[in-house]
Length: 156
Image 1 (cartoon, rainbow, N blue to C red):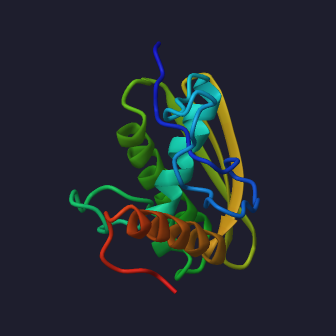
Image 2 (cartoon, rainbow, N blue to C red):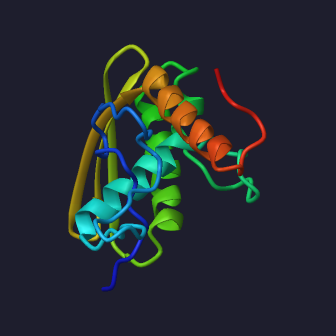
């Protein structure tokens, strides 16, 4: 399966700092052109990073974006977590249309924090997040789009 998403500057799912570029800026390859992601796992993680940073309703297609934001305003009971799993699974199918096999499980061991374990094809994705982390990613994405002239509002 060919991969070719443009590479982002930051290390996916890691906090890092760069003096001249943000984590969501496009990376430049050694010869000076835009760098491209060719590794399947890296591409999956990068797309997941962008998905997690996007709130539903923020893009032209109002159905695109991460469903997790709304779940942090509810008690994370077992029935709410089942709803979250179903919606997250539907979203994954939109984000990764080239895969046909998915599974998702969600647990919560802390207030307003969720752990997601997912299979995207044969690739395993595990992460724990909360509303603060998602809002931070959302701000990074907004700032990057604003700096590229693609956004109209800089988030503070």
